[in-house]
Length: 383
Image 1: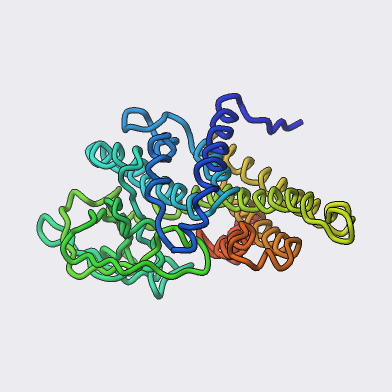
Image 2 (image 1 turned 180 degrees about the vertical axis):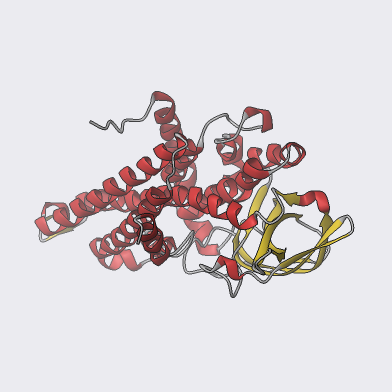
């Protein structure tokens, strides 16, 4: 029999983040969202709590926890708001984790303490205007000139890339060709403010309106050769492993959004009355909320299972893809049903479920589309 109860330490973390999300995030995030404004004060408090350092060693300023601990924090934040949750998820799994996984000791000592404290955010420059799911189609180049790398190209839809506290961007770039003539991709760290690096104004997005997402340009951006992250030509393998881990974290985020929809609907069903009684007394509403809870429960089990295999050091690519597919479907379906239950109020931006509805769609796209997850699952089955 599988027991999915959390250990005491995990449960204490979950409760702490849940209370923070409820007491500190919920009262103010709606205004940030409507203004499309990055919530610096909230992020600073998250840094003080140690959330950005959860999965990292104490030697680098981390909390000495693990990746699952970070996922639990992301889930609880997403029950209230996904913009805040994705700022943490991207800051850890995409910003700091590549340095932690592949960096030299000097690189770790230089960057991780600041990233773990939340005083600095890192970004992961992978997607390009013409290279999304086909990451191997990257056109951004990194050419070695003497003791420097010279980077040229552009990146699109990069989270945490243009905030006032963004400190470093890890850029996947074509650095040459292998023996077969195929593109050789490496990753190079570009500090914010490097000459030639241009940061566009924030995108105006359908959802995640209080998170930072921008396009980046690289015009003869010159950085020291020591800014190469990991082995030369291993950038493609590196970011694939980072994305596999990231799918588990995004699954946690999607699960949190799905659960937030349930929470809001249970509350509203007990308050909203029609024909003389609360709508929660009608079987049609009960069944819809029951289905929402079942989807959420299944999504949580899926990402717990993927995280468990990850922590045991076992292959988890299939489980990560399954959890991403299931949880993003659950988030989208629950957001749609929650909006239906709220009726006209669900179409008003002041209602949290309206925010959930706007935020849910990207979960079927980011960190690999649903179609990519199905492709990965089929491959793992030998098809």
